[in-house]
Image (cartoon, rainbow, N blue to C red):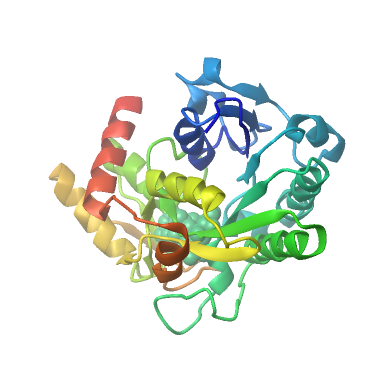
Length: 313
Ligand code: UD2
């Protein structure tokens, strides 16, 4: 692929976006859009000189157009994540995750971009009874965040059917790995577990810890974003971006303690509103249509992530 192909990554200074940026560097010109609300320029350390960075808020439609112009692929990862954050403070997450997504899709359509890959969320499934969760299941969102991310999928699909903009939605399943920010109460649970493990303090587990997640290593998700941008016959569709396994919080916390040879019983707190109980991806469609091939076992992913936090501490 010619090196002047332009890729735009919204949320490119975020945890997942900054990993994707590194995946794309050898494949073309990378342009990052981020307002640094939850992202950090430090996430781009070592690659900052090889990319073009725009401090732009995706709520600002007029500012998006010139940056997206000329793009081959737009990877739309900018969002205000977190289920509890969307419950506590729903307006900003609504505006960014719905209006912002609309603005990105519109700018991409106006720019006649070849394709948009959209970061959707496994939260769309809610508490569907059956595991693993398959793309054909009826969505059942339990929180504003889940609704917002689902609506983005619908918009992505309609931008294909109505405007001919190729889109692929990937439902990310609890992504973890290096550069995930552990400093907010809304941070992903594994980043918080890592922080506590290294500080030798006890994490808080909401509920009895028997809820499970399909924890997916960030590099596997970044690889799948790339594959989704290249696959044929997938425009307008949605796929699970998961690992295909699921582990309870109790299992993961136990595993982490064993890795460090420590004993730190967790604090228990009431379950969180909007929380999904079990989550596990059926990966068959992504394997078949996108060539998905996750490489990292949970042990290997946790080991690499822990080493990164140790170095960053
Ligand atoms: C949801 C989505 C995920 C992604 C993410 C973005 C599901 C199943 N997953 O993740 O795909 O879109 O949102 O934010 O909906 N917890 C604790 N202690 C803590 C923090 C969290 O016990 O200190 C629990 C929390 O109650 C939940 C689990 O850990 O049961 C995972 O929470 P999370 O915030 O890491 O991610 P989750 O599942 O809401």
